[in-house]
Amino acid sequence: MTQIEAASYVAFEEDGRFYLFNSARVSLFQVPEPVFRIAGLWESHCLDDIRKELLHFYPQVQVEKCLTDTVKLGLFAAAPPAAHDPAVLPTPFLNELYLQVCHDCNLKCRYCYADGGHFGAAASTMDDDTARRAVDLFLDQLPAEQMGFINYDGGEPLLNWPLIERTTQYAETNARAAAKRIGFKLGTNGTLLNSRIAAFMNHHRFSVGISIDGDQEAHDACRPYYENTGSYQKIKENISAYKNGLNDCTLQARATITHTNLRVFDVVNHLLHLGFANVYFEPVTGTSPALSEADYAVIENQCDRLADFYTAALLRGEKIALTNFDMFLKRLHLKKKFVYKCEVGRTGIAVTPSGEIFPCYKFANTEGFKMADVFNGGFHLTNQHQFLTNHVDARPDCNTCWARYLCGGGCAYLGYLDGGDITKKNKFECRFILHMIKRAMQIYVTVNQKEPGFWNRYFK
Image (tube, rainbow, N blue to C red; front, side):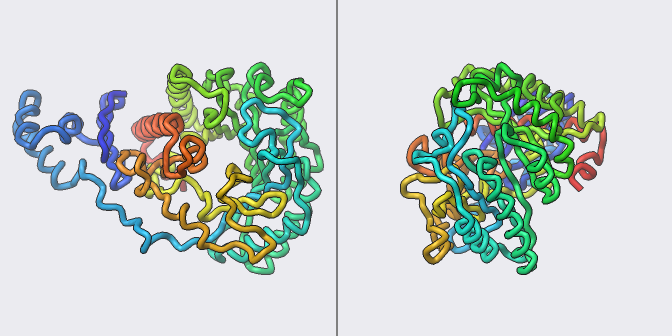
């Protein structure tokens, strides 16, 4: 895919057709070939020089029309000054609660950012009083018009499963009384699943993510039990035994890509063949062993193959979802500016087993980031200010990037890890996301060429 990038746009060719993405409008246009050529000249040449260059290739009438349309439509216009100054920051609220029901885990993952689920402290579990106070605080801050989600997290949350059952029932009862809508999510390593857990999550319509890194060799290399035996076989058995019991759940495989499983295409295919219809993967970041430049080159090549595979699968009508592409495909289709990476510290918070409140689960027990606790006066929205102001237009590493409104900016936690600054980007995270956005554009235009109207149906 031939491509031209600038601060305010990216232009590319796909199957003999030419496209322009304008970042200020978050809009993807099909354009004539001369406009594609203009994209390569726009920032470094004046109009007269562009005209002279184009006249070597195209008739004057076509050149003049393309230049007129380019200027009139503002196809290469820079984004207007950011409107996200402190006076117009969004009104803070909560719609995501991460309950870290235990800081403990039964696996010893090689790349764990959370110190084996302990977050740098002794193992601990949440009690009922703490969980209920957190739910009460959350429901109080959840706007009536918003859908709220309670995410059970750890460590490995299934180590404290009885609390999850009781808290879910408590939250549902109190949400109904307050006329508020909530849903539930849970991320697990999958080793402790059983029929009772599966039936409960199915009944309460949980969204469930299972961490699994590919085939047995790749997975066991990074996700063993503490006695160094592999965990893959147990997870595979549980998926086979309980997948049907999770029919009403959104069940997703979540793979971490390390040096041991760089062949992303094979990882995704393996997980699809295990029975997952929804797969998400992410290169390991902010931990050791880190990925190298050469590793990322392999990952990008694999993602190119995966984009072609996914395009063909969509056109065949296969019911699979590759979230890494879908999130950007939807944003392209909606033409909506995403100015934040995620809900960290703004619309989402994490509560530790001891009741302390942090901006997200990754920041748990991180010095300087405790926002409050659930016992002493609750949560004060003024503590969200540093995250409210950390929008993409204010981030010095992001505010001139053509993809900023599709990405929303980098992970605040990775910025903090890299240089003690939540406004900074992690260069490898940035590289990976940009590549996935480009591939999503390729998927979007190819599918639209072959089946017009597809995306209207897909995202209805």
